[in-house]
Image 1: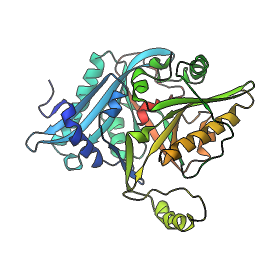
Image 2: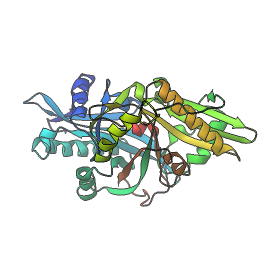
Image 3: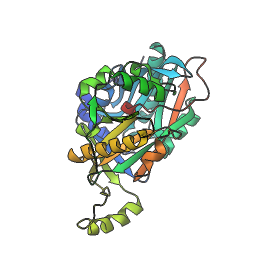
Length: 357
């Protein structure tokens, strides 16, 4: 039985959850929160999800939320059901309060849901500077940290030179499917739903994803693009000191030189995510660079602020993409085995682009 204060979320909770997101900015130095018109958009990208809210019935206020999605994942070369938790938020007024403890009730309820659904593990991604969350995971709930990922962000502020327009290809393109599996299929946490297509049915239905390719002789490259800025943006509440110093300098020279736009406190950021980087043949990397330039131009034309991509630190494209990056965020992967046999050590991590929305 759930506590009276913890229940399943409904569509009627959408306005309250949007407000709650605004009150829970993430990050230590660069602080921001997600703006969505539909709070449940992220959950819909997975299909099989469970969203719990904690409610102060006396005040008629939703003060906490926790969501999880079931995925079939490759871990140690074996497909295992796993529950990915995300969107954990607690209203600032309720942290370290008696009612706030109901979020632990929600967490335990989510673990039970995962076990009932046959999950072998439950896991999530946390910003490395989210000290309260990382301490809670590491010290009280039986979780451990196993690897992580880096999100690199390139500023979108001027058009890049593109010699030839890439071709848009279908997700079921045989070469795309084969190359994606070769590059990423052996990594831990690769979703089994991507075996036959790098898009799930829910991702395809959203109309926000596309794949682009370039070829030259025996060389070929491809990237996926997720237009997240069409459905959500990020509002900045605080910026690091270095950004505040650079802002007037960049503003002064902006009429003369194309310079990156430094985020302002109160301003918004729109993300265009690039994922599933592929390059083959002697000219593959050159073609990949041209695709990144094309993605930059698409983002610029539609008003996005940043071109981002998530990487396992050992990914061969990580060093290439970060050369033009302005900012990066480190994430740690916290996980808890719910059944025996889950490997204690992980191989390279596959960042699911849905997890970054």
